[in-house]
Structures are given as C-alpha cells and as structure tokens.
Image: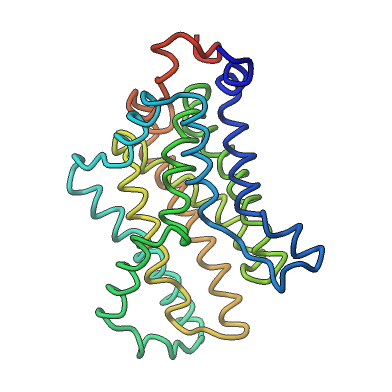
Length: 275
C-alpha cells in the first residue's frame, strides 16, 4: 500500500478538517493579494473534503458507509418533527422575547408560507449553502470519526470549536456577527444530539440545518439595538436547548450508537486508531 494512503488512513480526521478549511477559505489569499475584488467563502468545503478524503483513504467501502448515513430516513416521526420545528421554535421564542422587550418587528408582515417554502426548497439543493455544503462533511464524516475515539459530549465540543473557527472569515469580513461564533459552537451540540438520536442520520441534521436557515430571527426585521439584543437572546435560547438535552437525555451523551461511529477501517483492520 502506498505510504501516502497509509498515512492518510491514520490521519483521516485532521486531513478532512484541513482540506475543508482550505477549500472554503481558498479565495482569502487571492483577496489579500488584490487578485479578487472580495472574499468569497465557500460552504461546499466540508462536502468536497469528505468526497476527496473518502476516495483517497477508504474507497468504495467508505463511500457506501457514508452514503448510508446520508440517506438514513427510517427514524421515528418525532425526530422529523424535531428537525423541522425545533429551529423555528427557537427563532420564534427569540423573536417574541425581543418584541416583549420593546423591539419592533416589521419583517413579520412580509413573511409568507409560499416564501418560506421557496427558501426551504432552494436551500435543499444548493451545494453553495450551509445545509448541503456542511452536513455531509461535518456531521456525516467528522462526527463518526470523532465518536470512534471520544464520547458524544466531547466530540460535540471538539467539533463545535472547529466549526466555529471555520466560520471565522465571515466575522472578519462582516458577514456574521461576533456572537455568531459562540452560537455556532453551542448549536453544534444539538446537531450531534440529533445525529446520534436518529442512529447517525445526516438526512435529519440536513433538515434541521435547512429549517434553521429558512425561518430565522432575521425574519422579524429587527434593527439597531433590537437586532443586537435578538442575537444575544438567540444565543441564550440555543444554550438553554443544549442544557435541556444534557440534563434530560443524559444517556445520549455517554455513548453514541454503533451506526453513528466510523467502522469502515475497523473491519479492515488497517486503521491503528480503531484497533
């Protein structure tokens, strides 16, 4: 076996993260050198990195296991409800709390079911948007590798740090507020919890991510101090949701189900990390 493949099999997780960052941030050096008019963040980085690393290190067995996680749909209906409704509920709780504190919400008058459905549908198939760009990589590939070594709680914390850093350029270039980074860290725990509770279903985290970006706190149309306060409230709501899962569903954080743990190279015996 070529040395590079042996090395890559031993270091799939860091290789995936480095490649995901490199692809998503690839325009940064060009922008800094004045060769691009603006920085373009590429959300497709995690998806592309997973495709490349699996192909180089694992081959057909890796694609098969990854693909099964992507389309795992036989989960209880309650989890579909959680995936689709929990993000909207967090946004609504944030918005109504901010309105109760006196913030006007002119955007609500412009929200329509047809508009929300259109946004939801477009995000489902757009690889340059968060759901399709991130979920197959961060949840579908990185989480099973993390959980092959650590419990779900630690895996979620580690992934939360990585995903927050991955979003850093959006803060630096004014496309995301600073509070967006700790919010990203916190909500990663919900993604990992949902992934494990559905037996390692990327489809469900994909729906969760899509729902999260369809009806948002921004839909309320807050501005100025009201918008800043809404972001802080949303962070608090997400933290509260995470603490609720930790306190009321402790078993979910002790051990991940076998179907949510990487096992491709365990079976072949070629990955010393998993021996």
